[in-house]
Length: 347
Image (spheres, rainbow, N blue to C red):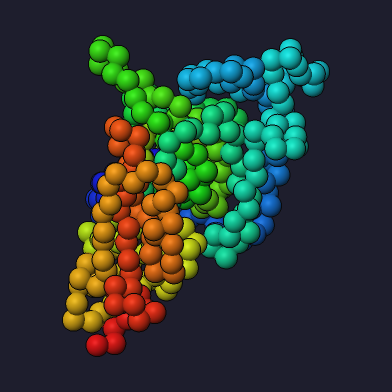
């Protein structure tokens, strides 16, 4: 379930009002506090549950062979019959087999989150042909969330746009969507609908530690692994503080998350991606960088070569109508002294 910040604020307000209005003799009706479990132990249990799901469920794999415009509406995940035999093996694939197959469509990704080693899985139904989002970008998606008992708890049939870093409570989305690509374009069908061409389509299987962990939410108990079918339609690069540096470049330790401990250069209790003066000197960050835009470049590779260097980054590429390319190059060391000026408070 995707929880936007506004909804969280409203939830907290309502919860507070509810607590204030309760009488002391209503204590018996208060929710029982959830015991905080060890993350390593919970991850092991969640991984076992997800693997068991893979061994007991199959999907209609043939629906995604030579399918130029796949959709999550084409996907059917089913539980094996009691005899344990896979029905119609020519058209269906056991999820476990999809994981075990070399270069198979079900992929395991290992990562560290909250000082815990996690395994997260995603099924590639179509990688997509456009731009891949960063962990902190805006995305336009459709999705369906379901639990390991196959109960659906949330869905968005009409495309919705949200910010992966500020509007998503489930960190698993930030870990998986960058593995896919948005559409290469779209066609207006003239009936109020849009057909997105060659967009990312997949399923993510998320342990509770990368979902809601100890927090129960609508229809989802605490410590529940959850899953999402999704379509990645479009993505938009974020610069949350408008300082000219894309948000993804302000993740100083490259862990795909933002914390005051790791991502606050000047220790002013404001993470850099929300700080217009990252090093706390007398100059704003936007005045300590250099942005250069180029047009009519023959190839994308030429732009990439122009951006080579320790302090340069190609932050945007657009293919022009004539087949040539335009791009913006960010230079973090305009004076060439070997230091990123926006992180150097030395005057």
